[in-house]
Image 1 (cartoon, rainbow, N blue to C red):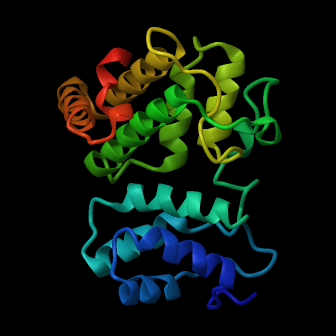
Image 2: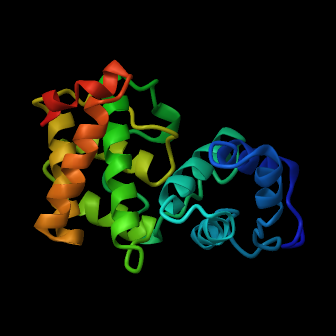
Length: 224
């Protein structure tokens, strides 16, 4: 496939993800801007961060780059694109033996809530530190701080973060692993932004979740 071509599955994934931010005609045009690698020259995920920045600049979506990045990855996985290649540094292919994507079970309520919170923290880092943020660097630093989480759950977190599983799976309860992962996200956030900015971001996320119409998110304080 030539780099200028957009295959139908990729086009559908981009349209699905970008439709949350753009009108249909704009989403169609933005999807047409995708430039994947030529055959044999890398993963279809290559250049995704650059693509998100370009779309944000062209369509006035600055600050939404990280959010779009996550949405596009998930939409591509839903289309079966790049499922085993999602921007994972080779040296972190496995943390230790545990579950793989093929072993995944549907996420429980606690896993969904914790996943949404960790995603919100990553989006905050992308907005506040755009010059240093990259999905790979952020997720690597998060996992470094997460070593105290039980190995099986840590593997499930790694499978989700590196794209081997489309969502966080396992049991992540409040006052247990769920609270530990959220605390880990805060520690990593403070390392990236400093304590003052980290506190402001963390407080804003908690307030947004509490004001959400989703009861799953509104009960976020039980994890803090």
